Image 1 (tube, helix red, strand yellow):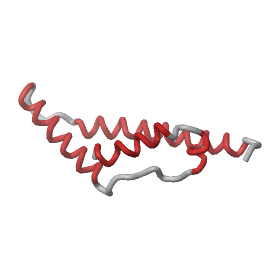
Image 2: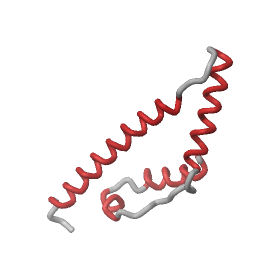
Image 3: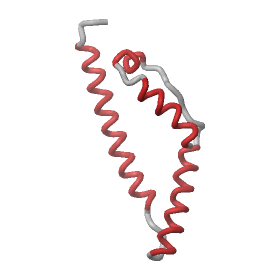
Image 4: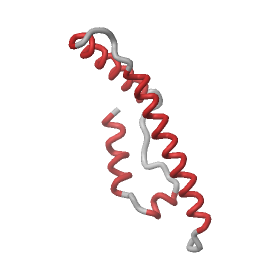
Length: 92
């Protein structure tokens, strides 16, 4: 997943400007389901470490879901704010 996400992240950081944001084009992507595979592997790893050090599985997925929901909510709010600012901007 990192190999797929890193180039996109670099493009986003390099193109962190108004024109790129307003162009509304995809700067990249990763194969469908690759994120789920990554988090499943991560959950297995976290469970293994937790089992060896403390005992029992660790509910990483539930915490990650809650964090992801917060990020998504923030992104949606930012998108709506972005749209409102774009509509009120008199310059093309």
